[in-house]
Length: 241
Image (cartoon, rainbow, N blue to C red; front, side, top):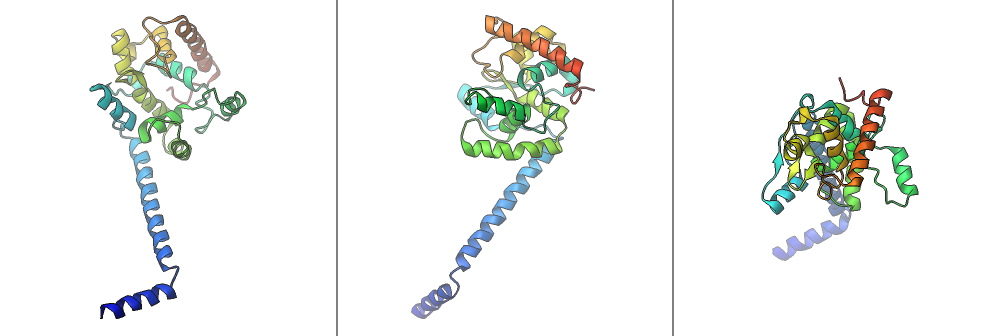
């Protein structure tokens, strides 16, 4: 009896050689659609709800044993800090849809030694993905960034960025950074303090805003000029009320 059943199964498989692959394709498609729906759901959720710790933050907690992050809404962050961060990391933040093509072209022309990630891309990396230079991660970042730009306001993107950016080992977000370095709230940062915090990005573990090196001092001065420029020419309009 068992032999007859196995022979019938074999004949059925021969009669429908594509059946197994068709079922596999349907299963892969089903799980792919579920994954896309889950990610889209998180993007929509985090447009209103503050995201929890990301993978990198969890990794830092495991490495150091502590993480300091105190979430604050945009209304409780100094406008000077918001402008300084944009001037330092993504001066055309209000003008692009997630990718600064001019910066990308310049990065390619320089041989790849120049960074071109926008604030939107950094938010996607810190909230949804992991750190690293692998092509799969970059591909996922490139796919998710326009989705975040579509469903989040620019002000929300910058708010999340300022609350998840790393400013020292285990220190995440501008509120924790302002208290850690200067003993003040993020709302009370002076233009110089804000520029120095922005100047230590993207190397917060190698730069010090309290005892700034000549490089950090020069960069902070340039950031202050850039912050004044984007205020004057309207490139800060998308995140300021």
